[in-house]
Image 1: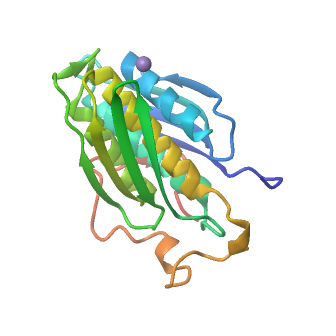
Image 2 (image 1 turned 45 degrees about the vertical axis):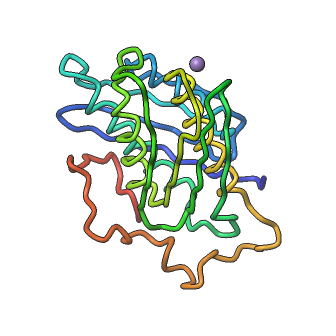
Length: 223
Ligand SMILES: [Mn+2]
Protein backbone atom coordinates (compact mmCIF):
# COMPACT_ATOMS: atom_id res chain seq x y z
CA UNK A 1 0.00 0.00 0.00
CA UNK A 2 0.88 3.63 -0.36
CA UNK A 3 1.97 5.98 2.37
CA UNK A 4 -1.54 6.91 3.44
CA UNK A 5 -3.58 3.93 4.51
CA UNK A 6 -7.25 4.31 3.73
CA UNK A 7 -8.98 4.90 7.04
CA UNK A 8 -11.86 6.67 8.70
CA UNK A 9 -13.30 7.36 12.13
CA UNK A 10 -17.03 7.71 12.61
CA UNK A 11 -19.03 8.64 15.71
CA UNK A 12 -22.76 8.28 15.93
CA UNK A 13 -24.94 9.09 18.86
CA UNK A 14 -28.69 8.74 19.22
CA UNK A 15 -31.03 8.32 22.16
CA UNK A 16 -30.52 4.57 21.77
CA UNK A 17 -26.82 4.08 21.14
CA UNK A 18 -23.44 5.68 21.00
CA UNK A 19 -21.02 4.06 18.55
CA UNK A 20 -17.46 5.03 17.66
CA UNK A 21 -15.53 3.14 14.99
CA UNK A 22 -12.04 3.57 13.60
CA UNK A 23 -11.43 1.47 10.50
CA UNK A 24 -8.25 1.03 8.47
CA UNK A 25 -8.95 -0.74 5.18
CA UNK A 26 -5.24 -1.25 4.53
CA UNK A 27 -4.64 -2.77 7.92
CA UNK A 28 -3.32 -6.01 9.35
CA UNK A 29 -6.36 -7.40 11.11
CA UNK A 30 -5.71 -5.77 14.46
CA UNK A 31 -8.97 -5.63 16.37
CA UNK A 32 -10.31 -4.02 19.49
CA UNK A 33 -14.09 -4.33 19.66
CA UNK A 34 -16.50 -3.82 22.52
CA UNK A 35 -20.23 -3.69 21.83
CA UNK A 36 -21.58 -5.24 25.02
CA UNK A 37 -22.75 -8.21 22.90
CA UNK A 38 -20.13 -10.94 23.11
CA UNK A 39 -21.18 -12.77 19.98
CA UNK A 40 -21.18 -9.58 17.93
CA UNK A 41 -17.66 -8.79 19.18
CA UNK A 42 -16.58 -12.27 18.15
CA UNK A 43 -18.10 -11.98 14.66
CA UNK A 44 -16.75 -8.48 14.05
CA UNK A 45 -13.30 -9.68 15.07
CA UNK A 46 -13.53 -12.53 12.57
CA UNK A 47 -14.67 -10.06 9.89
CA UNK A 48 -11.75 -7.68 10.51
CA UNK A 49 -9.11 -10.37 10.84
CA UNK A 50 -10.14 -12.06 7.62
CA UNK A 51 -10.45 -8.75 5.79
CA UNK A 52 -7.12 -7.59 7.25
CA UNK A 53 -8.85 -4.46 8.47
CA UNK A 54 -7.70 -2.70 11.61
CA UNK A 55 -10.83 -2.08 13.63
CA UNK A 56 -11.34 -0.22 16.85
CA UNK A 57 -15.02 -0.10 17.74
CA UNK A 58 -16.89 0.76 20.89
CA UNK A 59 -20.65 0.74 21.30
CA UNK A 60 -22.81 1.61 24.28
CA UNK A 61 -26.41 0.82 23.55
CA UNK A 62 -29.75 0.18 25.17
CA UNK A 63 -29.05 -3.49 25.82
CA UNK A 64 -31.51 -3.38 28.73
CA UNK A 65 -34.16 -3.40 25.98
CA UNK A 66 -32.54 -5.87 23.58
CA UNK A 67 -29.53 -6.07 21.22
CA UNK A 68 -31.50 -4.70 18.25
CA UNK A 69 -30.55 -1.02 18.23
CA UNK A 70 -26.94 -1.68 19.12
CA UNK A 71 -26.46 -4.31 16.41
CA UNK A 72 -28.16 -2.17 13.79
CA UNK A 73 -26.25 0.98 14.69
CA UNK A 74 -22.90 -0.82 14.74
CA UNK A 75 -23.71 -1.97 11.18
CA UNK A 76 -24.54 1.59 10.13
CA UNK A 77 -21.40 3.07 11.65
CA UNK A 78 -19.13 0.35 10.30
CA UNK A 79 -20.67 0.78 6.84
CA UNK A 80 -20.17 4.52 6.98
CA UNK A 81 -16.57 4.09 8.12
CA UNK A 82 -15.94 1.69 5.25
CA UNK A 83 -17.42 4.12 2.72
CA UNK A 84 -15.44 7.06 4.13
CA UNK A 85 -12.21 5.11 4.23
CA UNK A 86 -12.69 4.00 0.65
CA UNK A 87 -12.95 7.61 -0.53
CA UNK A 88 -13.57 7.90 -4.27
CA UNK A 89 -12.54 4.31 -4.83
CA UNK A 90 -9.88 5.21 -7.35
CA UNK A 91 -8.04 2.16 -8.67
CA UNK A 92 -9.97 -0.46 -6.70
CA UNK A 93 -11.04 -3.83 -8.07
CA UNK A 94 -14.60 -2.95 -7.02
CA UNK A 95 -16.14 -6.40 -7.57
CA UNK A 96 -14.94 -9.47 -5.70
CA UNK A 97 -16.15 -12.73 -4.22
CA UNK A 98 -14.96 -14.96 -1.43
CA UNK A 99 -15.90 -18.33 -0.03
CA UNK A 100 -15.23 -19.02 3.62
CA UNK A 101 -15.58 -22.36 5.34
CA UNK A 102 -15.88 -22.82 9.06
CA UNK A 103 -15.62 -26.55 9.53
CA UNK A 104 -18.87 -27.93 8.04
CA UNK A 105 -20.29 -24.46 7.29
CA UNK A 106 -19.65 -22.70 3.99
CA UNK A 107 -20.55 -19.14 2.99
CA UNK A 108 -20.17 -17.24 -0.26
CA UNK A 109 -20.05 -13.45 -0.42
CA UNK A 110 -20.03 -11.39 -3.62
CA UNK A 111 -19.66 -7.64 -3.34
CA UNK A 112 -19.63 -4.64 -5.63
CA UNK A 113 -18.32 -1.41 -4.12
CA UNK A 114 -20.64 0.37 -6.49
CA UNK A 115 -21.85 3.38 -4.53
CA UNK A 116 -25.35 1.85 -4.62
CA UNK A 117 -26.79 0.05 -1.60
CA UNK A 118 -28.28 -3.33 -2.42
CA UNK A 119 -28.38 -6.62 -0.60
CA UNK A 120 -29.54 -10.16 -1.14
CA UNK A 121 -28.78 -12.25 1.91
CA UNK A 122 -29.89 -15.86 2.07
CA UNK A 123 -28.91 -16.90 5.55
CA UNK A 124 -30.72 -19.65 7.37
CA UNK A 125 -30.09 -20.56 10.95
CA UNK A 126 -31.45 -23.42 13.00
CA UNK A 127 -32.11 -21.62 16.25
CA UNK A 128 -33.30 -18.18 17.28
CA UNK A 129 -30.25 -17.13 19.31
CA UNK A 130 -26.44 -17.11 19.17
CA UNK A 131 -25.42 -16.27 22.69
CA UNK A 132 -27.27 -13.00 23.37
CA UNK A 133 -27.52 -12.22 19.65
CA UNK A 134 -30.76 -13.12 17.87
CA UNK A 135 -29.80 -14.72 14.55
CA UNK A 136 -32.37 -12.50 12.80
CA UNK A 137 -30.09 -9.56 13.57
CA UNK A 138 -27.28 -10.97 11.46
CA UNK A 139 -29.11 -10.16 8.23
CA UNK A 140 -30.23 -6.88 9.75
CA UNK A 141 -26.63 -6.00 10.57
CA UNK A 142 -25.47 -6.58 7.00
CA UNK A 143 -28.40 -4.67 5.52
CA UNK A 144 -27.43 -1.73 7.71
CA UNK A 145 -23.81 -2.05 6.63
CA UNK A 146 -24.67 -2.25 2.91
CA UNK A 147 -26.96 0.79 3.17
CA UNK A 148 -24.29 3.03 4.67
CA UNK A 149 -21.31 1.57 2.84
CA UNK A 150 -23.30 1.87 -0.40
CA UNK A 151 -22.27 -1.52 -1.61
CA UNK A 152 -24.02 -4.36 -3.32
CA UNK A 153 -23.80 -7.35 -1.04
CA UNK A 154 -24.85 -10.87 -1.93
CA UNK A 155 -24.29 -13.60 0.60
CA UNK A 156 -25.32 -17.25 0.63
CA UNK A 157 -24.95 -19.81 3.32
CA UNK A 158 -24.23 -22.89 1.24
CA UNK A 159 -23.79 -25.41 4.05
CA UNK A 160 -23.69 -25.68 7.81
CA UNK A 161 -25.00 -27.51 10.83
CA UNK A 162 -23.83 -25.36 13.71
CA UNK A 163 -25.22 -21.82 13.90
CA UNK A 164 -22.02 -20.44 15.43
CA UNK A 165 -20.05 -21.86 12.49
CA UNK A 166 -22.60 -20.57 9.99
CA UNK A 167 -22.48 -17.03 11.36
CA UNK A 168 -18.71 -17.02 11.49
CA UNK A 169 -18.45 -18.26 7.90
CA UNK A 170 -20.72 -15.39 6.81
CA UNK A 171 -18.62 -12.71 8.52
CA UNK A 172 -15.36 -14.18 7.26
CA UNK A 173 -16.60 -14.46 3.67
CA UNK A 174 -17.90 -10.88 3.67
CA UNK A 175 -14.64 -9.61 5.21
CA UNK A 176 -12.56 -11.36 2.58
CA UNK A 177 -14.74 -10.25 -0.31
CA UNK A 178 -14.77 -6.60 0.84
CA UNK A 179 -11.01 -6.68 1.35
CA UNK A 180 -10.40 -8.06 -2.13
CA UNK A 181 -12.84 -5.62 -3.76
CA UNK A 182 -11.15 -2.68 -2.00
CA UNK A 183 -7.69 -3.72 -3.16
CA UNK A 184 -5.90 -1.38 -5.50
CA UNK A 185 -5.40 -2.99 -8.89
CA UNK A 186 -2.22 -1.45 -10.31
CA UNK A 187 -3.49 -1.95 -13.86
CA UNK A 188 -6.42 0.36 -13.10
CA UNK A 189 -3.91 3.11 -12.27
CA UNK A 190 -6.20 5.37 -10.28
CA UNK A 191 -9.19 5.17 -12.57
CA UNK A 192 -12.68 5.32 -11.08
CA UNK A 193 -14.06 1.87 -11.89
CA UNK A 194 -17.37 2.87 -13.38
CA UNK A 195 -18.56 3.39 -16.92
CA UNK A 196 -20.30 6.44 -15.47
CA UNK A 197 -16.98 7.91 -14.41
CA UNK A 198 -17.05 9.16 -10.87
CA UNK A 199 -20.81 9.31 -10.52
CA UNK A 200 -21.47 5.91 -9.00
CA UNK A 201 -19.04 6.34 -6.15
CA UNK A 202 -19.99 9.85 -5.25
CA UNK A 203 -22.27 10.38 -2.26
CA UNK A 204 -25.93 10.96 -2.86
CA UNK A 205 -26.73 7.66 -4.50
CA UNK A 206 -29.06 6.54 -1.74
CA UNK A 207 -32.26 6.87 -3.78
CA UNK A 208 -34.54 7.51 -0.90
CA UNK A 209 -33.24 4.78 1.36
CA UNK A 210 -33.06 6.22 4.84
CA UNK A 211 -31.91 4.75 8.07
CA UNK A 212 -34.51 4.77 10.83
CA UNK A 213 -32.55 6.98 13.19
CA UNK A 214 -31.24 10.25 11.96
CA UNK A 215 -27.62 10.27 13.04
CA UNK A 216 -26.07 12.91 15.22
CA UNK A 217 -22.65 13.21 13.68
CA UNK A 218 -19.56 14.66 15.25
CA UNK A 219 -18.65 15.86 11.76
CA UNK A 220 -20.36 15.76 8.39
CA UNK A 221 -20.10 12.48 6.51
CA UNK A 222 -19.12 14.11 3.23
CA UNK A 223 -17.48 17.43 2.80
MN1 LIG B 1 -16.13 -18.94 16.87
